[in-house]
Figure 1 (tube, rainbow, N blue to C red):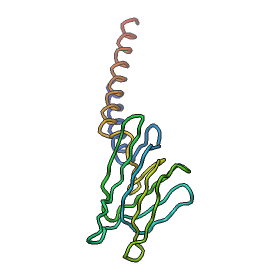
Figure 2 (figure 1 turned 180 degrees about the horizontal axis):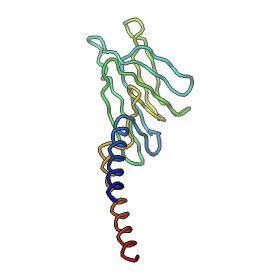
Figure 3 (figure 1 turned 30 degrees about the vertical axis):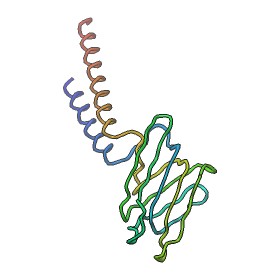
Figure 4 (figure 1 turned 90 degrees about the vertical axis):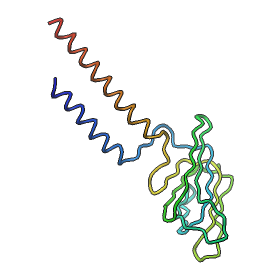
Length: 164
């Protein structure tokens, strides 16, 4: 029995290490509303389904917040992330559900004022998705479920020994 407990604890630790270094997306990937106001370079429209850009610091006098905001109406989830120069943002959107998408040329060569408003399938910043649920909640839920499974297994084993 001790080997099983040690194995379970080791499994939890390994999963925790893997879990913290790999982003997970739970539930659906769709945001009902997405607003991006940013200044960037390397804008690349990836066909009809999305675009990618690299965030740049706006020049003096140009008031652009460099932010991404997303909202899901059904659950009330909302996130607003500030973008730093050098961040790579990828937006995948749903066809024909874009209210505003504009890549206006700026005064600096190859720089753009990026405005996007509409629904989004997913939004990633530096290849990490904006989370569906806070990871601070997922880890304790996983550990709690594992502990409940261990307690159940112990009780079941104790009952089986009592009937033998």
